[in-house]
Length: 409
Image (cartoon, rainbow, N blue to C red):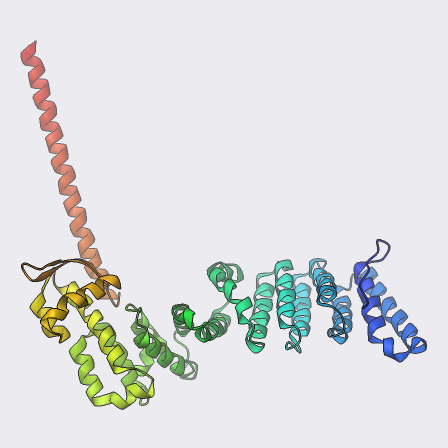
């Protein structure tokens, strides 16, 4: 198999043109091939001499695209390393962006052939770029390539850096919306990443704020999906879904109003409300793949957390009646709530009460902020009283010591 040899006498880009054009025209015979190779090399030399980097990149990627399946992966990586490096030669950010678009589009074509290598090339290109939007554009190309070729395992690790990426890219709402939905869909396919998928789905929904009715309606299906995923998740008990406009629009929607009502029950009401809802809408729940027994389990835990917000001490009898369980099951449900970090509490078996130290708020809206402000004001007052007491005692002690000193003299 042919191998690239870059010598010190020849520009690397020119070596690539020579190498790829010779391969591309090899089957035509020397009489046809040699003039074509010479012509392409002459064009490349002119582009290099005149600093026409976009034209050079266009020539290089066209040649490379023709022989992509005919050379080793090592040679392909070498070829595209040189091609991608052209973006660093341009003094114009706009030209660098256009070159990035050209290269990444070519690399993404026929992505079923060597997809992992194509991803690697795109990430190499990404790392060479300085313009934030150019980086975002190439990242999106890589993301879509990974999805189309089912090699998302290569790109999932990058999601951990998404917050820093977003700060660097500084992209608008529409770009964020597209990005978050693709990431959420990728993670949804990896069942171990359900929480992360839900996280990016909610970030997608947050991008809808104040658009016209048509744009908002685009989010309805995804808002329903978010509600269903939250209700299904056995380890998610807190959510801001009710505060999102994309979700709020479902409240009066003819098709999805009941789904919104279900979310509201889970986040703001208790088990009895869910049981009433299920009695009237069991078919609806089944249509979304919701299992009644699992919903009861989750609602009991969230109901117990809600009791904790209302009472410093929860009587066993109240837990039994509210959760609709037997006497011997009360402590089991309290332990479950502790294990899921919904409650920080102690069980007083003698007095048959649960002493609550801290409990999770399933929603954190205006009411919760006001309650927190009240608590902080109380703590501040208590600390001020303690400091005043310490200061008063200090003054008294210093006065006593001074008096004692006078007596001794």
